[in-house]
Image 1 (tube, rainbow, N blue to C red):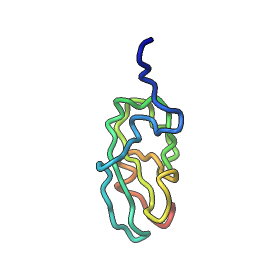
Image 2: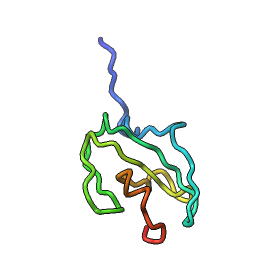
Image 3: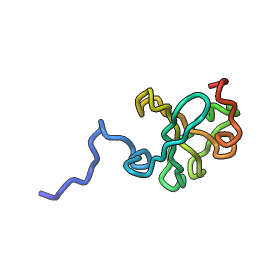
Image 4: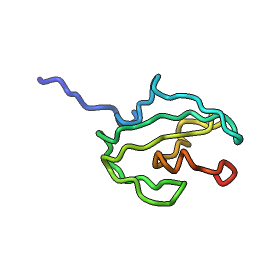
Length: 90
């Protein structure tokens, strides 16, 4: 019988395996874990909390979450929206 190469359903999708690629950024609203994604493996459409626009599959973008919360609370941002965000709004 052949070997199965399926990922388990409780694992994060490959594009969200953040590992050591996440960096910490300090902002007026706290510390944030931030990682840049190329979008190469992205298959979902995400909603950017900065502009409420869609982030289409294949689009490079940022994933960020406050360190006081879990990675499950991460949000996908357009890179430009993350750079110009007003921390008190989110």
